[in-house]
Image 1 (cartoon, rainbow, N blue to C red):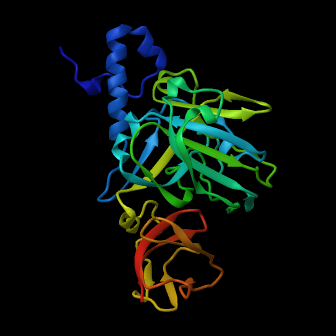
Image 2 (image 1 turned 90 degrees about the horizontal axis):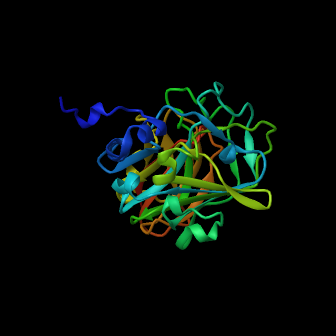
Image 3 (image 1 turned 135 degrees about the vertical axis):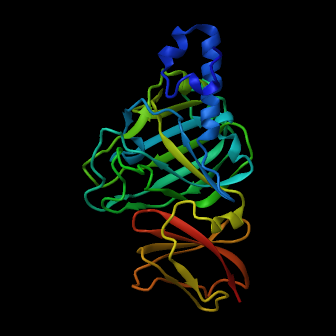
Length: 324
């Protein structure tokens, strides 16, 4: 009896791919690619991709949330993220190792500097132990400055939504296709506790064909396990009006059009405002300490802007407004 594509088996391990011979390996590669494609949760304008598309591995790497300085690169081939072509990548998030059962951190935790860069790159099998050699073209800094992670905002790895804490970009990145390199550089945080993000092993087929990663260790650079990652995107800058990470359906922004102050009403605690112009450039950023969140718009010229709001857990939502 002929088996359907979905009877191949999911999830599957690298060892089953190798042991079943050449034909099964080809089928498994195709099934894996299809799994990547189907794992994208597409909406009218917003979407997200969770990589890799497997569930049976639970390795660890403390890089994104390490309390010591870290620099590392994540390489992703075009195929698993092809549905994001010509979309704006707005944020990323990691999942804690599945066996890590407590939300993190216990207290508010600060990174003195946390930078994220995006660029095109070499194919994952051609990864070099040289950061510059993996980059094709120019790197774009999409996030910089200090980072405060509120207590308990990073969910346990076995939670229903382990990607609930989001690293929101200062400037959305237009992905035009090709291999993608995500590079993170940070100074470490002031918390004595490191927590591991979930990874797949460096030797698995998926990690050498479609995905790869390297990090600076001492004076050298070495390959490391690829971390599970969620990549959020929108179709266009107007797509920022679609919630890439939901805060709440019950919030409202008023008045719109606005002259001096823009107010936000909702159930969640807003901690930060960011304003983007039509070109996707962040032109205004403001922390919020008021009981009724409000943004001063005195410095803005007349026109259409996009407001990004970030809550205490690091989740974000955005909407369009007009300055008159």
